[in-house]
Image (tube, rainbow, N blue to C red; front, side):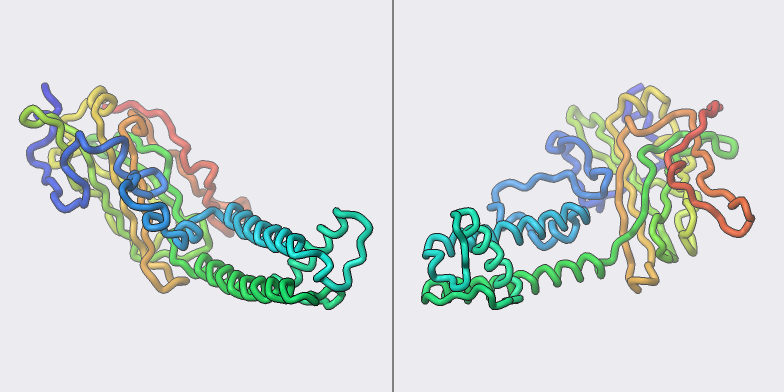
Length: 319
């Protein structure tokens, strides 16, 4: 039986997903596991096609600090070279016997000027050096203003601090089976009114060409009042599911992707936060269920949410 015939005709399709139906034009997955779109843009310049502000906001914390420090270092090296080119004699107060000592003094003078500290032991006395110092002071003032704005933006940006399992499972559920994955908040935030929506994307042969078809998957529980512990999101594979007639081989051979969208209200930000991810067919485990990831503390006072067990599964027999 062809894949198209295996898709349950009772399942409703989605036409407004924002993804194209021409499967031949798509490469790889629709969404990366971190929620970003798997799209490379062509035909626009680098400066036009990339928002540096958004790149710096989304950059990992350590990398962001390295970029800031590297920028600070490069700017000061540039101005150090500039002072050396106009002549070290235009910086009064430098006492140096070797060329390296002159470079060292020029570099530290640049750092002091860039940060507007200005200790006064070394100061410019020539017109060229004063002009360069004026430009550097302005650059430093502007640079620190931008850095402060980026730091504030990173701290104040609403973000859903949620971790998803790195795979989904097909597990026994009630009298049948269900597709399941898990999500949990990992920060000390309070998320309320959490809602989940998942869509199945399938590449199927239709009238001699490969097309994308999208099916909203009904959830057993699509909304919870508060999200403090882990939430196992369950799609029962019933007669209404497009996956109803799918065998294990169909899951393994079919190009399919499960698109996941989570929204919740974060009381700290007083704003709605969003999280996205997706799962491909090779990220679906048959005959498994998630092991519990929270349990009572030894003193019976707290509930422990153990993220080392986020992806822990147990093998089960499918009926």
